[in-house]
Image (cartoon, rainbow, N blue to C red; front, top):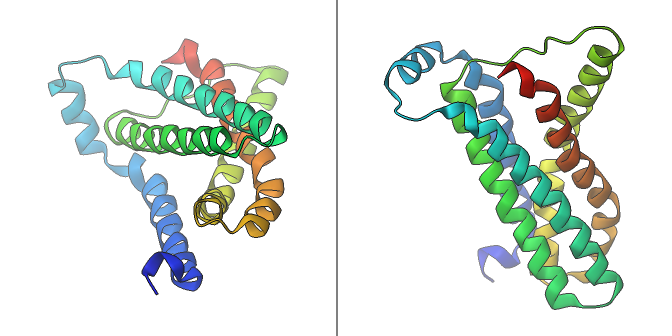
Length: 181
């Protein structure tokens, strides 16, 4: 039996990967020395990176919607393609997010009143749901790629709406912060 056919080992790997991602994302803002160096030495305007992240998040959301359309039409090949595309785009987002927050200082939201409350609600739910859903998204993708259809279908019914919410609220967070970059 290969490693990928051993569901228990794969679940452990996904759990370890999820914990590493959560720890990395939690500590990246603490590297202030690198941020100072980046501001002085990088020869590109890294303030474009949040826009790239928003575009990646938007593309993930659209890919998920198209994937859902194709599974409803029973077109498995296209459903798989758009799910794979969503995973690839999500991975690119995560890499770009970590890179940006490694080299740039956090951007504070400057709005006031009910918009500030709305922003923090969207941000809070986005952050919590992205962290909680990450291992389940990977597990759902694993089930689908291993042709464990019933497990894939059962988990996808729960994970899909959360992933879709996380993708589009990522765009909303960018739009809220865009004037302050």
